[in-house]
Image (cartoon, rainbow, N blue to C red; front, side, top):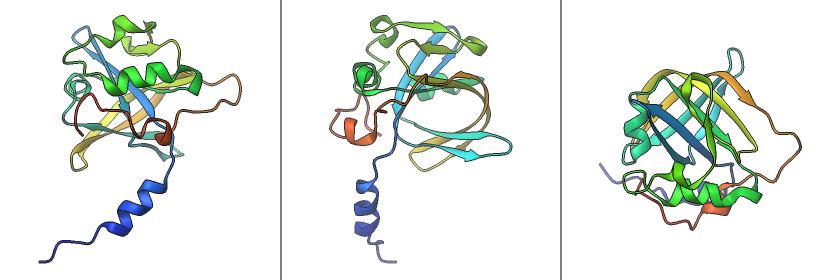
Length: 165
């Protein structure tokens, strides 16, 4: 069987400029977090959100033992926090020593500089190729106070990753 020609797909997805999120988790008292580019609302009624975590990163290993994940959206004013969670590995750096945060619902780490966030109970985990999908049921959150300029894929496109995907 011939290899598929993915040029059209690659060009199409390179045009997209979707929001990026920082996802945090905790298990066994250890917080973890990473930048996530694969995430989307998955249902309206009931509300569901899908997050893809790379099997290569520290947060994936912590999330495997977690019951909840927190999904954070940042405005560009705090892109430094997004860069911290996207360019450093929790295997070598304690990212939580370098930012302000608190324990939120279900003892999930909440990043204080996020413009908006929600905590979701993990309903299911399933393979998505080199990522694992986490289907979340929102349980609590904080909405933005005003329209912000969200950090998007274009803002972090050239960020060196803490781990390869």
